[in-house]
Image: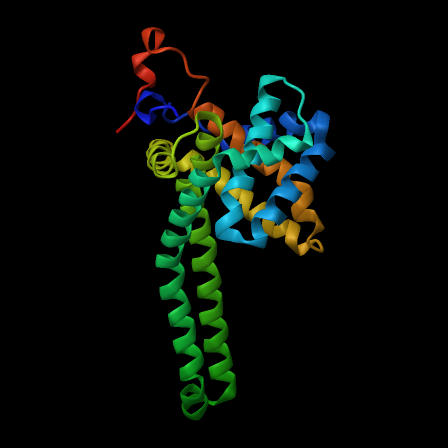
Length: 245
């Protein structure tokens, strides 16, 4: 297991559109293979989300890492993510815990609006009550989307770090969050493109989400490689890359 303190990252180099272009170029030659890898990994990870999600995400990014190296990518490589099962589990648990801190208050607010609906009907009529309810639903959905993008940005580099460097879950979360903060707007843009394009794909009979997934995950991998370039030995390291605060 590598010491996270020895892993350097760059600052201010992430360009969302460039990452999307590089993501497509990364998978273009083996597009349908990566559709299968990403789709299978996400579906299996969703069966028991907290338990399997981390291992599947690590497996997906292991395949992308092999593609970046120019090595042959085999579908079975996806299941090598179970080598990082414990780290992936810890990282996923931390992601879920932070997500609950945001989603729970929003859900309680929505429940409160539902409980108060009869009062609005009595005072303002059905039309006003329905309008207010739609407004609350709209705000709730907006909060969830914004939270997914922001939280996703801070966790975007977590699973690639585990896959490439074998970091523990907590180390990968901390280092990934520092790197995301140092590259905040670019990282946020990449995650926003992944979430929004995924939503568009879902609207296209859901199948579109799986077809766009290899490209958006490729964009994440392109951003990761920009932020965490191939590491050199400490003797030859460029001090300007060591942005660890």
